[in-house]
Image (cartoon, rainbow, N blue to C red; front, side, top):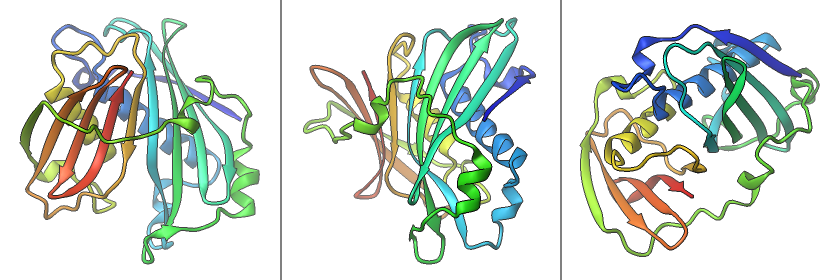
Length: 236
């Protein structure tokens, strides 16, 4: 099942250059997953008190171009499969009918109390009606996420109350905002960007440490909560 909708442009999602921001792409993908899940019987509030939740493990994004504010956006998302405790979801954003951004993600179905994955239910497999279409060639499935051996710069980022969501941790979109803040010198257009969520950052956290490295094949941004690697972004 492919789920498609037209999105009203939100002025807050666009930068001074009138282009859609990188972190806003994550926001759109997050919204798409929520509305699609609600359409097949799993609205966000259905997880409240259920003891289980979907948590984003990793996502890859290919921005062919970041559309400007004048273009009309159409968003498509679909499940490309559920396997044991994993869910695989893909995305596509069109601007005035032309594909401009593609995405692919892997989610983990988590028992909140035990903090470990649990199997998806047979009803979920049926209701999500997955499509065996991967618009990014399955690269996310083989991505070897490694910390850089040496970092060339560091920056401490203060966190705000608004960074944390109803699930009691820093929202996925906020990580992309931090990456955007410390990578202003990089144009993401035409690259593949991999985001890996490793460790929850809780609301009592006051600051995080960002680190930047360059390798022969990629650029790496890491976010640390004290000594714990919380997040890794690799730009190919």
